[in-house]
Image 1 (tube, rainbow, N blue to C red):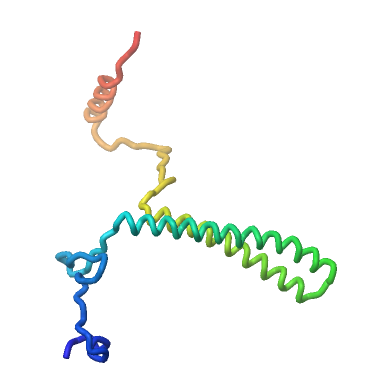
Image 2: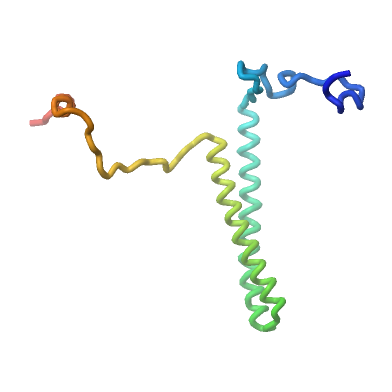
Length: 147
């Protein structure tokens, strides 16, 4: 009997974690390390494009339906029509948020961190005046004057 109840019930030999596809032997800390391959990255990119196109179609059709349902609700003056209209607006805005989240997820997946620029408004030198003078003299030496 092994520790794997499912393998025992199905009369199978359990696999070790590093024998599973897309894995390598455990690292020294005992947790398995996943291997990222180009094929996996390409599939993720294709899935992103498919999900992006589907989200855009849903948002576009939602916006079209909002304009038509708004006119219908105004004409009928029925509370249920306004309720459906409000729900459609909420659903369409959630689809737009999901599209933005999809872009964020892709950025995280690719490991890019765009927009993390730091603006330094005030800089304070911590050190002696002698050290500051050395830094300034080094900067002056690096700058070549053109005459």
